[in-house]
Length: 190
Image (cartoon, rainbow, N blue to C red; front, side, top):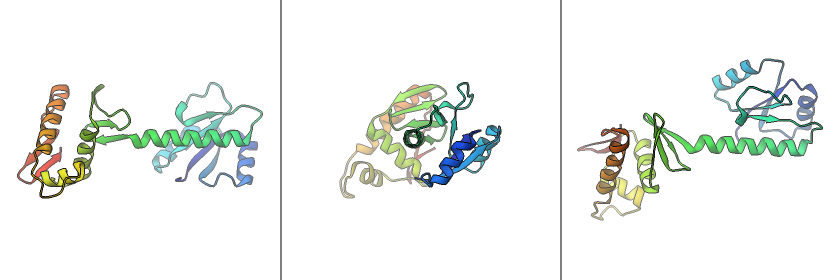
């Protein structure tokens, strides 16, 4: 698990307990002294994820990144909540991929643009991800080998057919006929 900031909202006792116990080795413990906004900005600037522990019921920050602490505090239960929250946040982050102007949710297999969504097949997702990860155009035989596992010498129109259908879906839903572009060198995501 990568290190990230665990911000403890104005609770010196909890901060000391966690710090002395050495059970939170994956977290950078930070005690907030009424400066949560600054700590969140610094975490974002440093490209670090964060989680806030607070006992305030009317806390105004992102609820997905906040754990409300009940008193008395059970450290084992608190650590379980921390780990669960981190796992959920990381899962959510890694399941949403930016592709040009679009956002793809790998879990729901949907592509989004300006509040509109379109359901994609697993192969369409794999095709988009493969083309998106490449900085250069990919030939049909390369795509066929990577996405469908076909050998180099197999003649197939699978790639062309899938790209045609995917382009049509994207064009019909988002009016974008240039999502996947092609030229003599192959296919590429715009």
